[in-house]
Length: 441
Ligand code: AMP
Image (cartoon, rainbow, N blue to C red; front, side):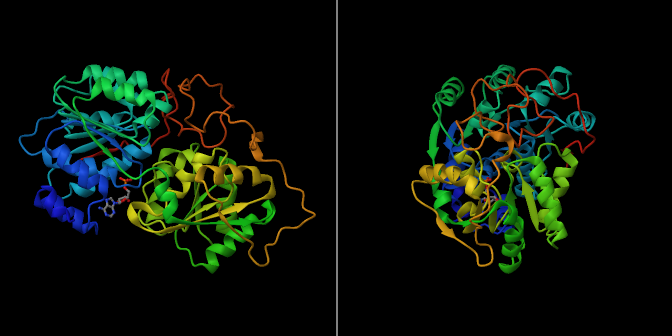
């Protein structure tokens, strides 16, 4: 199947082919005609399936016609990373069309976003908190909205955004098209979908573990103190030019990035304590090949859109087994193949078993020559004290009751990026200087 048969206009087909895409992914093949036809859509699709293009392409097509100042499409996302990526897709696929887009999120100054809105925009991509703030200040006009997209709706609910979403829904014109994307379907999502979608087409692709099945996964049993040496050895010996590495803590991410840089592997850490501008720079440098290793915590890495990432390394296993699947899902995207290495210390054996139970298979174990485990080495207990004990709140998401009520300090590494709202109460107080996120073409 080719893109030509989907009914997209030439400008979009040209942009798609310039991206090097030849075949629509299953979600694209199914969703694009539905969206073009103006129907509501409920889609079960994870990151990595090509879902962003599945809604971005047909929405761009629908923007033909006279332009006013007020936005006609609203895309809500749980995090600013995802918002930035969606807006980047809008620019990429819309580059041969006169489309104005803007990205609205917390944690940066409001001014550039206000200015952008004032100048006029067609596609508004936003996280809920800042959008409500700017609407309250009179900068956002929802009257022209024709299409609403909820991207990663399950994560939005996990992050406590349900009230914000309901509030925004009430502000939108009643007559509109609604698209809801979610990797999972909990009762909460079902409730939201039922209240919001009219006779939706339902598209479901690629069950959760299919990405995991495409990734070649290897476990290296190694003592914790030797991990960074083994990692440097793997990167050098396998000639990895671009590798995403996961650590459990922000501190660990910083330390490892520094150690790798000292070992001649230019690296940067990306996590919730970094300013927005530092995170954007790290991602840009990584994509541009100026840094070879990006060291990330789980939350910072969610939704990171990096094309053709060949390798992912778990420097430490995640506390929550599902995060392992998220992590390795960063590689082998949209049909490509990828590799994932996990460096596992004896203290992490229990976590490894939990992961294998989730995957319903055991992972290949390998000891690299020169990095054998020392029988006399006594492993340190897992940093931040949770080890493989009873499951606490999922880092940065988890409990339905989450929304900001969780006592600070009870969340392990990789909190939600600073500056994003936490469900109740504005947390936009700290505003690191950064780019406003407004773009016009
Ligand atoms: P997404 O699921 O939207 O995060 O997209 C996952 C990745 O797949 C992104 O890096 C896209 O650039 C890429 N992608 C999207 N559509 C296609 C396609 N039809 N062929 C190849 N790659 C694609």
